[in-house]
Length: 223
Image (cartoon, rainbow, N blue to C red):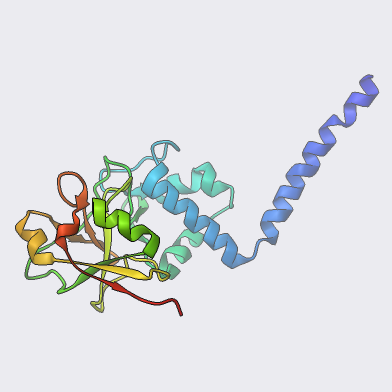
């Protein structure tokens, strides 16, 4: 029986080697996507659960991020982080060089209530003329009944057509709800601009923009 027990370690060793081989075989673009998704989860939602230190504005030290298991799984390096931040089409992250090392934050999309990202408060003078929220036809009835809701996040994401804007709606959206800015501002609803140019609002006291504050709804047919 003892002789039969010895080979029991072999499958584990093979599994570990297979895991390393599989990771090295992942195409670079796909690996970057995995790392980017892990960064989004950690910096927006999972820092407390994953025991990643974040300050009140959502900044984490890059060395702490690299030491986290969700990032270590992909064997990410400091250079990987720099490249992903620089090349991310939606500019989801910002890097900051400080005296004690590099820090990274997500520009928006947080669900952690204690995190208040550094945002620019928009006024009637700096607010874009039109802002909208992109959604889908099957969501519209619910939105018209209950308003735009920030759900589990800290803010409702909006888009505009200004040159500096990074879209706050999905490219696949087919319904666009335009917001009555003047009416919202008169009601005390505040709007902000994130570092990557997304318009954000926490809505009213209930965390929503009621449909009475919608200016119009436009539809775009699928191409």
